[in-house]
Amino acid sequence: MQTGFVFTKFADHLMSVAELSSDDLDLLARMPSSIRNFSSHQEIRACGEHANECCLLLQGYACWKDTDHSNGQITSIHVPGDVPDLYTTLSPRVEARLCALGPVVVAFVPHAFFRDIGARSERVAHALSLLTLADVASLRNWLVILGSCESLTRAAHLICEIAVRLRAVGLARDNRFPSPFTQSDLAAICGISPVHANRTIQDLRRKRVLQWQARTIAITDWPALVGLANFKPDYLRLR
Amino acid sequence: MQTGFVFTKFADHLMSVAELSSDDLDLLARMPSSIRNFSSHQEIRACGEHANECCLLLQGYACWKDTDHSNGQITSIHVPGDVPDLYTTLSPRVEARLCALGPVVVAFVPHAFFRDIGARSERVAHALSLLTLADVASLRNWLVILGSCESLTRAAHLICEIAVRLRAVGLARDNRFPSPFTQSDLAAICGISPVHANRTIQDLRRKRVLQWQARTIAITDWPALVGLANFKPDYLRLR
DNA sequence: CGATCTGTTGACTGTTATCAACTCCGGTGG
DNA sequence: CCACCGGAGTTGATAACAGTCAACAGATCG
Image (cartoon, rainbow over the protein chains, first blue to last red):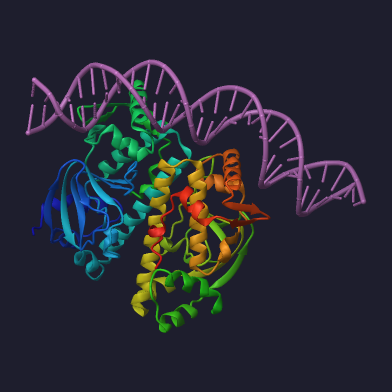
């Protein structure tokens, strides 16, 4: 168990939706945890598992993947500062697979810390609620996108959302961020075939809105990308 | 304001995910509320509204509809016993439109009732949490369906889910239930065009798994429908 | 240096959107 | 009573979009 500076991403994430006092930050700094590393496509949480701690993502990306082996649809993607399995504090059973997209560093935090947080800081508890609401809003937003947009819009929207969420925790400065996930991963998020994902990305490149090489994405024309994606970030509830 | 037997559907809904004591049921029976009627396609909650009470659905169906996108994608559907805007107890701002699918009866319940419920019954509070988790799981499940299934599977799945959720609150006995929503509504839920929705329903009829006439759906071959839908109801967390 | 994963391309097929026209039905007003 | 209207359901023709299969090129890694 250790405490300290590694939780700044979590604090950034909470502060992106609500104001916190220095007492609140102290509380977060004293969060007990144990650190673990995962390699690409490794399972952080397996389906059916019973969790008694939450994963706080410190570095890298993770995703919830449907258990059905045939296509492995991804239902959400998570960036540093996120706690993808926060809901296990209410019901410990894990119903899907939490997978690493590229190398990942995770801090495991006991459920008790989150359960007791309401008694220690009303503000932090409320910020956690807002994060949960933002996650649900993001799910609804993806539902709209999968239900009504074609592949180019889907891919563009994904890139926009990742960029904005990374910025909220102080990453993706200069519209450039690591993309250790594969084109097949993008396909599983956007609900398209890997071959079509490839063609869609080429289309984005041809339109000169982004570069994707050496496992890095660089957005070269943010307004154009936002336009293609019809991206409106209100649903993320960022201040 | 009134109290009483009208909340049996809500109690059924809670008891479908958790066990409640007779004290808990008393607590629910004393729930303060005011009843309102809505006609088909009327807005129960408008986008941007600030709620200080929740809607408990008593009769009929309601749905969350996306505000902006031209096609009005529906992101979730709700049946009697559901509280579609329970999340407004945490953050009162409504971010989408809650619309009636057919005639609807709603009980408006003050936020305070839900906020104070934890202090009065741990069990009821936990049951409410489980309902919220089931709603999110349903969203994720639809994400998988929209991302990886074709229209026949989507429509079949929708019918399966509605039937099971109605059964959980004592409706849809005999695999027959009212369907006041239009084929265009089904299209907006399944993320397909109204014309294609029509052809998909005809396909289901031709396969003799259901009848849909006089605003009523009758499932004539449940196992076949479940097979077409690849329906696995675990995610609804029903006992 | 071979094995494997990822990205890329072309050809073909299947699913779904779109447009337009038409029917059927329940209401509404003359 | 009937003419009319609008909404819902239905049908066919066509076009756009995306999936699948197969092959290969480039990267990465033991």
